[in-house]
Image 1: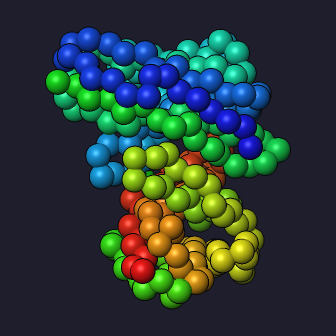
Image 2: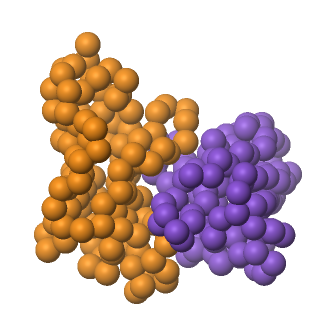
Length: 114
Length: 115
């Protein structure tokens, strides 16, 4: 499977600010996804990052709050905008390759909003 | 809303015992089933995938799938303290869920293996 890296690994931010998280895959993947894992909870899919076009968002998530880019097959960014303490969470990038039908995850970004 | 339910846990077993983790799902269109292991503070790691009814074995791990009962399980034989982690069941959504490569995760079962 491909290796996924994320930057930053963690951050502490003030409410009202925005943070952009970067996700880099070491080889091409068919699909890239962004998840949120709130404390003590499971993973919730935020959106599918589409190369060269607007991301596809899941119910409850909107582009204005979580703008996503994917300029090529190995890189994507997620921005958490106008943050509030409720956005404190781990944000995970994942990749899926059709040939293997397996989804694998980056190390995550632990975000704390004060 | 398609759901994935896991036994609530936490589950505690002695070293060397068999740990049994269970999962049920609601989407009959689901075709792919996965077990992820997540150590505290780490990201999920895929440990098993299963697509057909029956058992699939990989080392000390056995995944079992029963599509008629919408049930998938994970058995860990000869449990080791290093197996202590949260185990997440994940199920693909099926075409009715928008796309069959999207996963729905259960809340996870915390397993503790006591030396």
